Amino acid sequence: MKKSTLIVVVITAIIGTVFGYGAGLKNDDDGQAKRRTITVQGEGRVSGTPDVLSVMLGIEVREPEAATALRRSNEQASAVVDLLKGQGIKESDIKTADLSTYPETTPDGAKVIGYITNNTLTVRIRKIDRAGEIIDAVAQATGDSLRVNSINFSIDDPEKLMEKGRKRAMDSARVQATQFAKAAGMKLGEVRSMTNASPESPVVFDRYAAGSSANFAVGKEAFQPGAKEFSVSVKVVYDVTS
Image 1 (cartoon, one colour):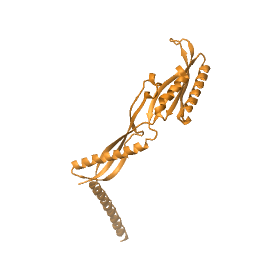
Image 2 (cartoon, helix red, strand yellow):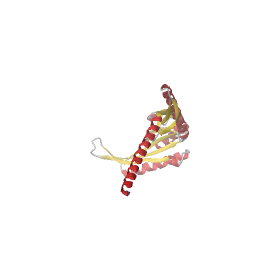
Image 3 (tube, one colour):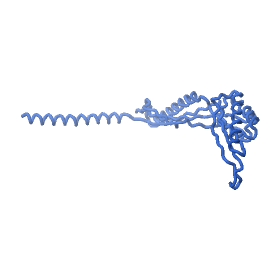
Image 4 (cartoon, helix red, strand yellow):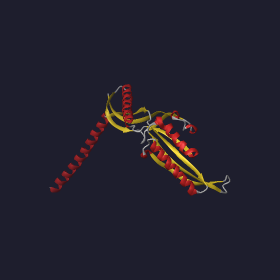
């Protein structure tokens, strides 16, 4: 009697477990069937006027001895740093980017005829309208030793622009989703999820004009900052209903 009772209890437990699990799956399936979504990707572009100019100033010195070339290069670089500070450039905006010394040989490479030292500084100029004037002053102090390697315009604090770009990206996503839903005879619901689809660093489009390397030190007219354009993308999933 006890054995029969035990078997009935076990069978009842198994049946209850099976039917309970099946009911759970059914509810989940129903929930998934009722949930319909649409996924779109919105893009927002914003632009602003650069307020910082970064320039790489190289000082190249040739001397018969490596030690002499290095010493002269360091002396000129120190003088340039002092000059830049005198022009109102903060010390934190002046950085040594590269320092190298290498032998100069005859065209056939058979004999060393001297040594060349390159001392490169990266300088951030926050008053772009004075950039030409400042570089002119450096050129006059260094003469033929100066090499202007590159320039780059940037916006010191782009966060406000990026905030506007994110809003435009979301607006773009909603417009697209609304159009798709309407075309399908459905209504757009709430946002289900959002994912930042922008690269780790925002995409930047440069639109500026600058003088050639031979005309960098010809006054402020050589530098036209133009505009910098930032692009932000977002992937949004919306609920849709009939």
